[in-house]
Image 1 (cartoon, one colour):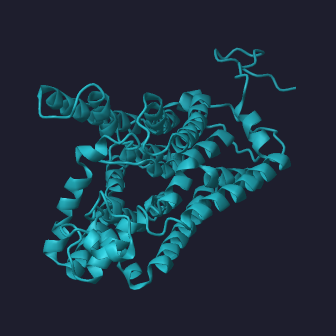
Image 2 (cartoon, helix red, strand yellow; image 1 turned 90 degrees about the vertical axis):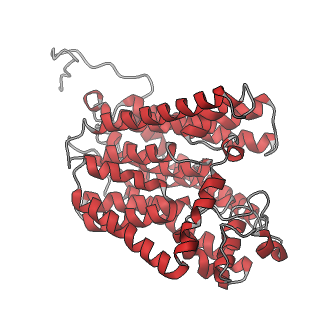
Length: 445
């Protein structure tokens, strides 16, 4: 008979366990009935999204990508030319964007789609996104301690994750970044630093915000990966300049300025830290040049600096070049989303990285109970927020509708907290919750 030791080291006193345990949750997810329900839900949800997508070939955000690619194809600067003059004949939804806002390397990547008819290009793009999502989920679950049934359950939950549906509804591009960061993480774990650096350089060239992970590489003393990140970024830059020219490449500054204007920060589903804090100010006054506006900018800067400081301090608890389980990596991923100049609900697909790593760690008995449950709560909160926005309608301006929309930021903040506790709660881990659980793999610490 095994005798448990208490927290004070005494023998004979069993440790206190929460009423609802991680083992109970994992056990429930792996029952055949729940697996059938989850995958039936995936099929129904997938059909619903597909049906909605068929009517959105000319709508945001693919309409902007396609019009921008058309501009490049016709040797027109998409950052200074009104896209409505290019896509208007196709009935593309352009207003109120009008100008390209994506990095030039990304637009260059999209240019081949402009050579296809609109509808075909739309489905090719979404097919690539679906392939990237499947590959990302495989990468995140590959090599984990999880039982096969639990992997299938988590794959279903990933496909049902509200930001994933939001991503496909708008034909967005963040799932490609998710795939690249998952590949980068696995390369780092296998000491393929050159490949990891090149991947990060490419991800940074097409989207920008992932470049914050260079700070992670620096703190983990992965110098070779850091050098290759610079090389990858420089290579992407040289190819972009060679094909687009210096003037058109630098013209991206117009798009960056446009997308960070107050008119976009004020939208409740802009979940970046700076946008959220700005809205807290603007709910009480109109954003006009004033002393309050100066205070707002100072508060935003201090909050962003404070968040980065928290991430750095947490990373310092991890031995250099010793981020076992990629804990700190997941924290830097969520930090990059929060500190992005703009971040929409579909950016939360990045949360699949800490979700997968945290579940694996809990299964091994190497993650805290509170980190798991706040991650679960985040998953639920964003689902409720997204459903609430659909119920109220996109143009709703009531206090309740705005509060529901703002919950998407709350969900992002909860993922950050889960990742932070994932890194810092090393001495407060769940004691092997999968031990002796039928069908669940357990690993020795």
